[in-house]
Length: 171
Ligand SMILES: Cc1cc2nc3c(=O)[nH]c(=O)nc-3n(C[C@H](O)[C@H](O)[C@H](O)COP(=O)(O)O)c2cc1C
Image (cartoon, rainbow, N blue to C red; front, side, top):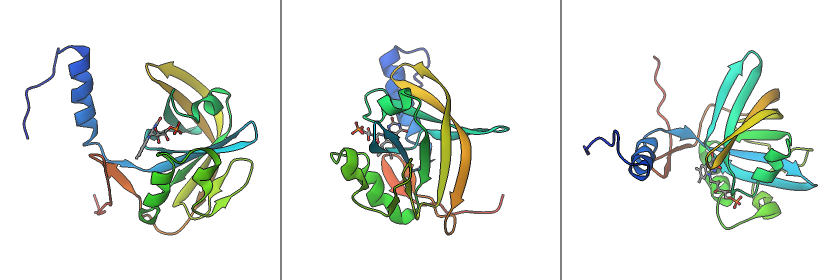
């Protein structure tokens, strides 16, 4: 499909064009977890990336309307649970009508101070180490405190509004 370039168009047209472009940027699906005022919280997320290895750090973008946002604003520690192919149902559970504690009703969650998924491909444990706000979202920096790995590399991919898998090749 080829469409007219949206260069220089009004903001709303650019936003729609950008959304269409981002559907072509494949992301690995994660569940962000934290604990706030004693309550466990979880949210499916793909707006996560490494920031630096020195110091080990990453960033996560969270919509201000998300129920987990107040916890991040309160500088809570958090975990990034990187899902495998077999865990699509957990991503669905952590983004739809199921809310709050009920999001932990499927999967084997370890009930530490910050909950983590026992068989996630990887769990990256983070301490809040900064944030800024831009438009509809907060951008939160996580200073990596620890990492757990489980099984083979087998990421659950999200692109064009669909879940899929990767075929890995040598460069
Ligand atoms: C695959 C996928 C990736 C998502 N990535 C993000 C994200 O990076 N940041 C975000 O704020 N919301 C993201 N969302 C949306 C949130 O998961 C969803 O809006 C949120 O759980 C709903 O908020 P609630 O917890 O208040 O119900 C994503 C949803 C899906 C299905």
